Image (cartoon, rainbow, N blue to C red):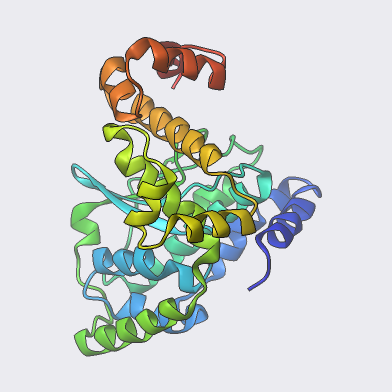
Length: 291
């Protein structure tokens, strides 16, 4: 592994050379094949169907990279392969997410029995001057300035059998990847795990550090020591979790503001509104209309 900061910096220096440099992630992602990912790639292509392949990406992505990991979300007739958003929204991370989606498209096409096609690609990046390489690779509508970085696939397409599906091989590589996953130091994942725990508990009120530590199977002292080692403050993570969850609920649901206030750990709607205005300089209602 190399540091994420070095990788982001490399992509940003390439992008400074102009539009051809800005599209390098798509070129790189388009060149990727399952075999480039070792055991992870073999597990991907030996899975029974594309949904199972995506589940392996969600579960074992950390074996390949600590950034640009995915989650799978089903919504009606669609499946979204969505890059989990990092806190740092610098250009290098946006380009990394585009590379990850371009690579996911390449290996999905590689393992599919039939012509693989997408409903759409959703990118948080602004529309570039030249979109030719994007259209050439993804071959579908591309929505720039979206609220997520994701591939959108028809569930019926994702449910088709993979060309090289093999139950025995698939199980073997799952066991192998499980072993690799256990060996990876989870320090870099500490922040994500804490944010997840806080987000799950917010509807019952803001959890204390002791409560989160208990849910994670460690003592308060151990969790505090690990936070300090990474330069993290628990109250900052609580704030981040509330902000992120409120933004997602406003963008992706039609819940009333009072419900969102409750789900993000506020005692009432007016307290939530005041906090949200401090974060964004506008009311939750205005933010939702803009989104």
